[in-house]
Image (tube, rainbow, N blue to C red; front, side, top):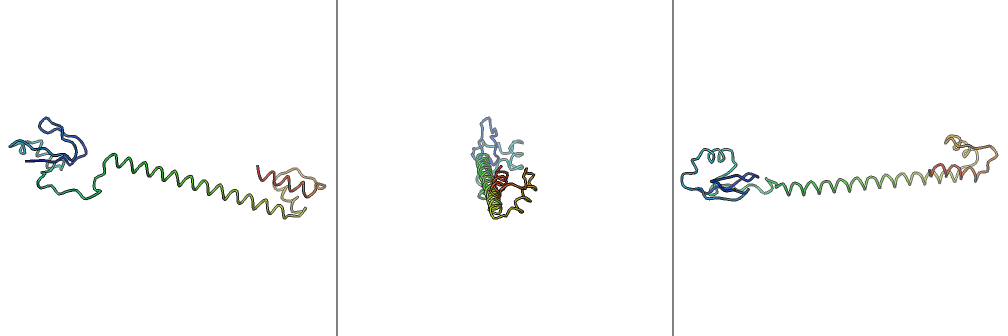
Length: 140
């Protein structure tokens, strides 16, 4: 009888290592040995002549599993970087929009905005000075 190792581990048959997926010819009468019978019933080994091949992709080797994991991690990191870049771009656009709105404000609005931001302003500050103080505070 010829058997095939269906497990993912090396097993010892008749004092010889049997690698996963490899076959070995058993000596006559060895198929009735309790260990061989146990391996056959548990599906660790199978009769090579009557074995049904596993469906494609049914078993994944450790190497393939680690490769898939590495690809998934790389894809996750790329998505995180893209999300961070998009967030930074949105923040920059919001800052630019706020600066644009400050540029269009008149003195009373500028005084209110500066006071709301906690800036030290005086009533006699010029419009240009107020805009500069507010824009500097926004950029920080």
